[in-house]
Length: 227
Image 1 (cartoon, helix red, strand yellow):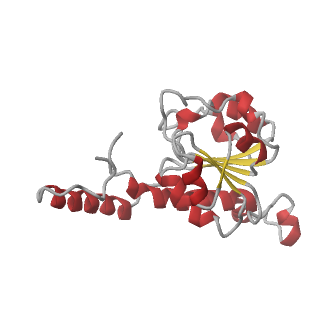
Image 2 (cartoon, one colour):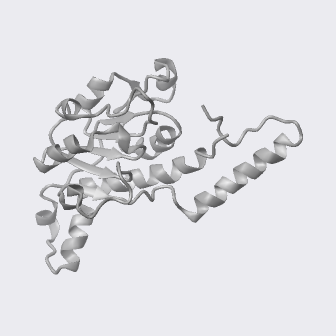
């Protein structure tokens, strides 16, 4: 059994927060303010954008994708999903649009990477795939760092083609010399999306609840079957 379901909501909430900060440059303007270099009104929003009516792509539609969906639905009805493990029929039932991997990369203004790692999808996003992404788009990585070839990603960010936020890295702790620390257009989070006291308490509760069922010879229903 796996306790992974307890992490979905807190990770989804942080994903939305990172998205809004990238689009509205909240983190940049805060740093400007504390450095006595703040700008006011329109001048502070020259590069800012709304999330409203943007095209959003979800790569992976498991627990995390399903938890993020109700948080982003109020902003747009243009939500596209790529998940080869889930049928198009089930995706459509959630009120979103199934699509191919390549099409998702090409059309999305905001791309969330939410998939688990398998032997087949390691490094699924490299330079070729990043070249398909529209200039100025956002990529939000919330699941596993192994899905992206980070050296290729860093090259694209350096050119100013992408905005990027991540909670995971290929090597943790991240070395002090890692060039990602010096990039613009990024928000870096130290693998903290699901690490809340509330979340760990919920983890204990679902384990306890399933153990209570198991000792009564009943099937568990709170944890997730590990596959």
